[in-house]
Image (cartoon, rainbow, N blue to C red; front, side, top):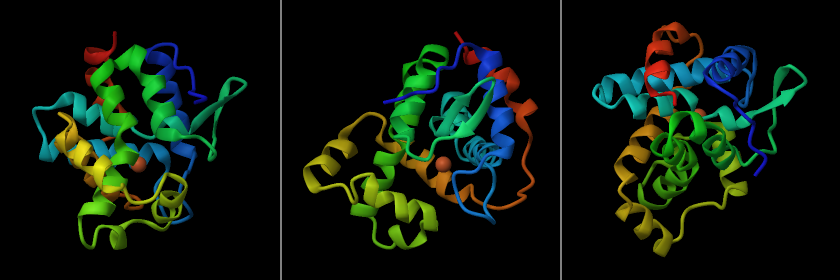
Length: 185
Ligand SMILES: [Fe+2]
C-alpha cells in the first residue's frame, strides 16, 4: 500500500488544506476537505463525546492524497482506506488508524447486511465497490460485526455517506485544530 507519508501535524493540516481543491468524486460533490469536514461535523452531533471518531471522520479520505513535489494530488488508484490508515497511525494513533482503515470494509458490510443501503450510495461509491471486493461475504461479515470497532465503523460510514452535500454550512478546518493538537503524538 503506497501511503502518503504524513510527517507531523503541520504536514497533515497542509494536506487537508490542499484537499480543499481536490476531488475523489465527480462534479457536484464536495472537495475531499469539505467532505471530511461534513463527516466530522455529523459525528460531532451523533457522537459528541468521541473526539477520536470525529477526527477519524475528518481524515478518513487522506489516503486518496499523494505528494507531487511540495504539493498534493489525488491518486485514484490508491487502496485509500489502508493507505489512509498507514498515513495517520504514527500521528493519530492506532484507533483512528483502525477507523480510517475500516471505512471501506464498513461499506462492504452494510451493502451485505442492510436492505436498501447499496441504493443510497453515491455513484462513485457504487463504482468503487466492485474494485473493493463487492458485498462482504457472510463469514467475513459475521467477523466484522463481532469486532470491537464495528459500531464505530458503521457510524463513520453513515456519516461518510451523508457528508456529500455541496456547499454544506459546517465549521472549517480551524474548528478541528485543537482536537488534532490534542490527539497528535
Ligand atoms: Fe469518504
